[in-house]
Length: 334
Ligand code: RIB
Image (cartoon, rainbow, N blue to C red; front, side, top):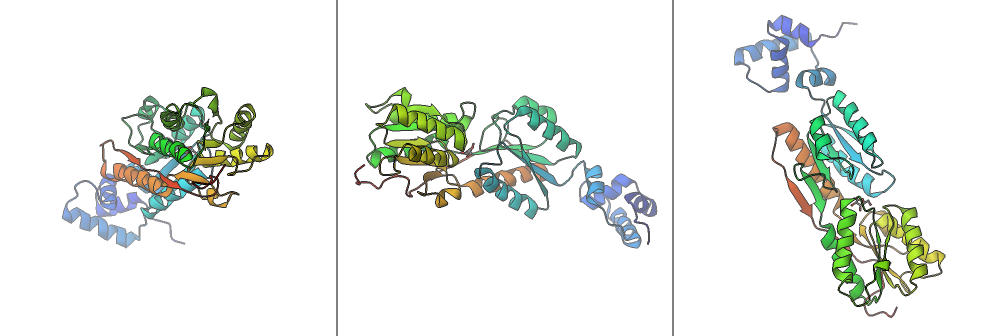
C-alpha cells in the first residue's frame, strides 16, 4: 500500500509554501497563474486528495453547520431541522443537531465544543442565549423562531398577529367565553401570542384574567392548565392554545372532564405541525411555514459564512389559518 501524500508533500514538490497550496485548494486569496499550475501538477503527480480535516485546519473552517433546538420531543423541531438539514447538506455542509433543553449551560457547552471543531456557523432556537455570550464565541449565527437580539439575524413569524387572528376566529364561529393556555413566560413568541389573544379578548365584555392559564410548551403542562381552566370556568366554550402539541393536551383535558371537542369546546392552536392532521379531532391551527423558515435561516447563514456577509437581516413570515375539526363550523350551535 502506498502512503498517502500530504499537503506538505505537495508544497515541497511545487516549491511553494503550505499556505499557497491551501489558497489554491480553497480558491481564495491571490495566487499567480504560474504557481497555480505548479501546484496543480504536484497534486496530480502525488495523487493528493485533501481531506476535510486538512481543509478545516487551513481554512479555519469545517464545512459544518449546527442547529440548536430547545426540545427535540416537540415535533415542530424535527420538521424545522429537516429543512435546515436539506438546505445545508445540499450546499456541502455537514449538519449537526443539538438539543439544548432551553438550558444556557448546555448551550454554552455545545458552543465551546463546536468552536473547538471550527464549526462554520449555527442556527439557534433559544430563549436563554444572549447577544453577549454569542459575541464571545464569535461564530456566525442566525436566530430562528425566537429573536435573540437586534444585532443577530433572525427568521421568525408574526406571532402576535397570528394569535389575534386565532382569537378572532373563535369569536367569529360564535364562541362566547374564550380562554388562552399560554406558553412559557420567558419565551418571547409565547408572550407575543398572549398579547395577540389580549388584543381581542380585552375588548370583549366577558374578559377575565382568570381565562389565562400558563401551560408551558408541552403536552402535560397544557393538559393540566386546561383542566384547571375548565374546572374553574365551565362557561368557557373557546380555547386558544399556544402550540399544537399543547392542543393535544388540551383535548385530552376536555375528554377527561367529559367535554366534547368541538361541540362543547372549540380549540384552535398554533404551529401547523403534521401531527395536527392525525389527531382526533384534527387540529384547527395557525400554521407557520415551518419548512420555509428553516430553509431561509440556513440560506442566510450559508451566505454569511461563504460571502462574509456582515449585514444583519430580520425576516418575519406570516402564519396561515388552517380550519380542521377541533373548532365547530360557523353557524353551528354550541
Ligand atoms: O411548538 C414549539 C413552539 O416553540 C413553536 O410554537 C415555536 O414557534 C416555538 O417557539
